[in-house]
Image 1 (cartoon, rainbow, N blue to C red):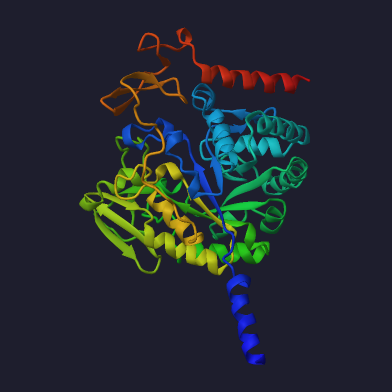
Image 2 (tube, rainbow, N blue to C red):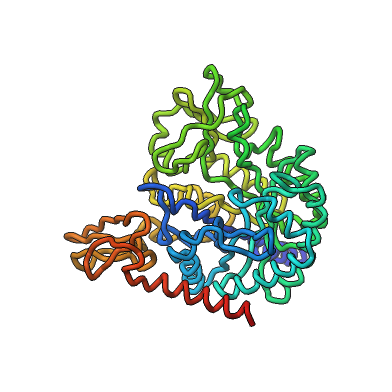
Length: 460
């Protein structure tokens, strides 16, 4: 009887005591994809929040190095096209945590350097940050400084960055904001000198542990985005950050969904071989050394594809071009590491680079791998059924509800989407694109009113 009871208790413990870890799944939306062309252009209705616990907006917000204020650096994208209000509606309608990013590759490192070095500028930063958060209804912020001490920074950035985070932690606790910091997780000596890892992790809720580097396409050798093992490998990085931070639950593993491209030299395809630089701009993304996964997957059959068994990542080449990317297998191997090291979760970088429209299979194919691995009990019903844009209920020409520059034509139940030219809005009354100043745009007016409210609050 005793042994039977023990067996029953053991079974109950195995069922309930060993429940799956509650991993955080962050979806990062770069928003720069708004400027892509045709099928690679990403809209708010392409976001499927069932795939994540947190949505992180990136691009377009930086720091004024002279004043310390949080500043919108891409007003056309975020304000005139109402992207910030879209974020607010997504949060309201789906009860998810929605965050935004200050910084990123397009923002100046020197502006961060100036701000963190001056107590008065830091105070201005904190004040404007709180107003920005409440003004747009965000739950948290990601600080993406690329990189302390680099690109116009100073040696004292390392120390001053910790001072900023120590003070910012108090602000975030007071207002119950989430604080995340994006870092380059590579383990070479020069990169490690940028961060005081134990103190940095101490003052934040989460660390976005990146392994891709925007400078790589301009280095004259073929390089993987995020190899699992080997030089600058994910395994080595995760174990080092875990050891020094003593807080694995704060580490969020970055999974790059985009494609890096290079021009080979003498058709040498082995990683590390000399190359001529970044790959040529493509027709849809128009960025050197870069493609989205959805842009590449439709042409994948025309490339020679290989898998590096040591680094556990795929690569491919065609003519004189060589690319590094992720697939189901490489992502799964990274997530196995994440689980074995008890990390806090993963972040997709970025969701607008995935096959979000399902041109090559299921929609959001790479994101699905992350969700199904970290939260296998979740069942996505009708994943491939269209949610937005809504179906055509009647024939006609209509303006998009989220973006005055976009419109669509409905004919016999079929919808075709179009975009007005630069500095034009679609005028529904006249069914044509006209200069912005001559067209009433409700979503833009709402954004301007929100900005006026923030400005009036700032002056109080």
